[in-house]
Length: 199
Figure (cartoon, rainbow, N blue to C red):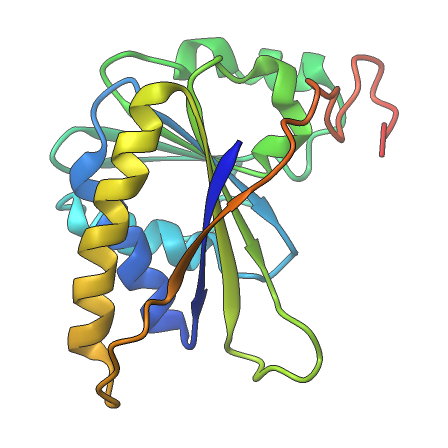
């Protein structure tokens, strides 16, 4: 699998990358956000939602689990961090949230891999090593499905333009890198059917 990676140097740059993805999204699309706690998943969503015309303040849904926003089209923002079993996720109405009329954004989506559709975009956000500044973030985009490959490429072109415009230092070096990554077998995710953490 070919994956796309970029390093952002501030929360604002993470928002910019999120905003660059927005024009490529259509109702029915699902984006799974994974990575470190506090790595910027909600910041990324804030940029994405703002670019889709959401005027409400976008907050982490950690405690409320689900936020719904109205923009160019409906956006459902879920955080399943506090849920312990697939049944809890299903009881929440997850299958109903996969609505073809909405864009669905799932924080900690890697925990419920088997419940995600076959075609979706995985965005992983990580805090880099200790030698990097605290506000730097490493973002990795893994497209699942051919249409997502084209959408990620389009996002890259937009993000490169926006990041260059926002940068105080002129540079011709690209921020994005494409690498090959072995296709991981379908995992059970962090959440199990019984409520036991599966690692």
